[in-house]
Length: 488
Image 1 (cartoon, helix red, strand yellow):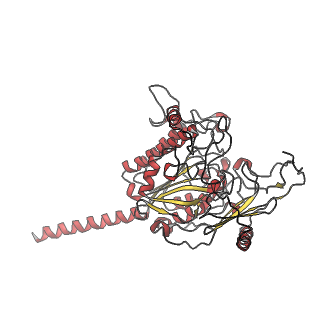
Image 2 (spheres, one colour):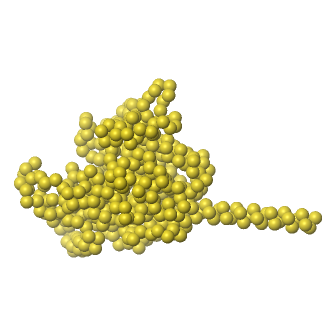
Image 3 (cartoon, one colour):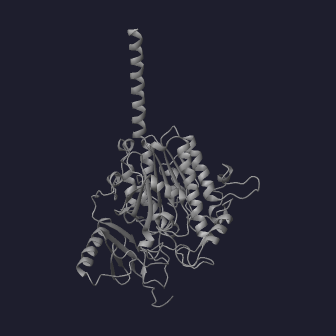
């Protein structure tokens, strides 16, 4: 009898040690699903203030994790922001300050007072990406969707991803309906619609919708790797133009629009709704795979919502109460929705008001125990770990200010730089060197320029901004000898 008890107790000890080891492995190698929207504005989610869009899945994710109210993209346009996510560096340090197709040597014209600098369009292979760190730590790595960080020699598979589905040099599809080809995409997406039931209606032979098709692939990856630690980059194209929502959703939101509502574009609303629906599918796949307790989920956008006329619409997005939109360094161009769910770290339904930036994702993910042990490390990191905030949103980060640099012309701006320090934000416009100073706590819409009211504050922030530009070797615009005043 004593021998039997001894054997049982020994078996229980082995089981306990085995369970403990498995739990430790799960803790060390947390899965990561990074979901990125394209051109999604800060107030485009119902949980962030939209009065038309319905985003129940993202709102539910926010209730399960932490919602950030002062999260920023490192640039007001796509390629630079994506580079900052992958490397943890300021786009200006990388000399990647414009979108891929616009990079290189600028084309001379006689309209612009300044000439933008020569820029880098391909994410250098010498850069250490977060995917490479995951890969070195033994993770399965996959990229699904928009890449926009270089030509074929710089596609995701050259930057640490074992699988690349749809990641190309192009920034937008010609259409969201299959076969997705068109002049730009050629055959890059030819194989996507063949998987899953959500993207194809076999009975009615309806064409696949790109947002659904990308999710089909992401769900498949989650299912097939539920027993393997993985890093999944799910970077949607939506809600970037062309504005093409599913007809039933378009009709639904068209009926929902009422006079006086902030958001009026029901086609855009349909695209936001499809984005949310597909995020819900991803969340369900994680739950169904039984990996919800060891999977970090991050939801973010690469820049602010696009404003201005598009086809019959006076504007695509309405970023109100924020000023301006995509391309601008006003809040509407750079402030983004951010939701992070980190099992065992974030408290359900928590909210963080501290300013954070897309450079911070890299050092934050490096806090995963398995990545801490990885031998490969970035040579420079311009972000800070958000782990203290994820544990306690009232914590203070060891950082004085956030910075932006966009030495280019866009429909919403001329060459510009900016700094945010606590509640103060200063914008420097290169054309005439004028400064704009805002107190974001009192003036979220940036309507009241306080540069003349608080000249010492403006001067101090401007000096800090210039020092930062010098320290990171930010490229500056130069005078355009071909410029003809008033030639628009």
